Length: 307
Image 1 (cartoon, rainbow, N blue to C red):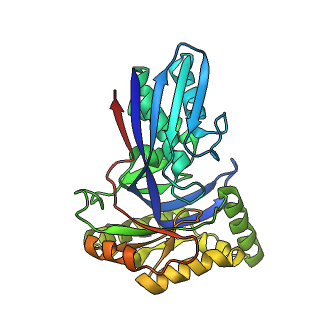
Image 2 (spheres, rainbow, N blue to C red):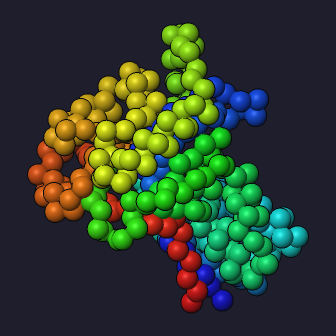
Image 3 (cartoon, one colour):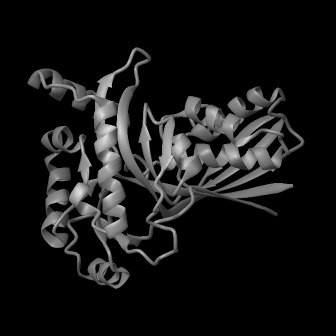
């Protein structure tokens, strides 16, 4: 038996980062949205022992550094069974180190796919608990759609009016993929250093969550998403990487707004009308090495299929 999984990328439409916690993570409040750009996993049981990973992108680690590998080990441990022989093939379509959650989505896809492959009697609640231990973005990638995320990423509140309730009926994103990579670890270090130098006041996450929730409920209902676009990573990253700021400025001048996703490096704009997005991708004055493409909101984070 083999199981195939589509693992959808995500965008952060809103991202506020708070102080570092005792466990080394940061608290956050974020409005996250799945998009139809997706990696594909093929999960197969073999007669051998251990895990074998192959990937279409040679820059992706094929050992325990890969979240897919760690997902298999953690799920097997939670289920009280050995990993056994497992072959995982990754078709990589989501850009790496782009702030699109590709690694997290693959990890979430491995959890959901292996539950089916191994015929595990594990409820969603337990699967989400494993996802939260695997990585901060993994729970959202497992859920998908449109959700307000808090804690270090483990608390999820699906938005009652999702952007992708009807496929392709509610606008599209113009996504710019730069020839730049941004390490999440380095981005957090820059953010912390920037705030320490500025001796800035840390906001209260609970108050921010309430404000963000009310604002995004209205923005989603009206389709006026850019009015609330925000990302705390932009200021420190643009200061450290002028070439990334230039790409952001280029898109902002073209579309009227632009936002960095996650810890970067991908930048996007929102078009309420799909036709406008399709026109924009052809007219966008790309800088050297950029790849513009149109992506659509997705109502799911993971799609599991069997052969």
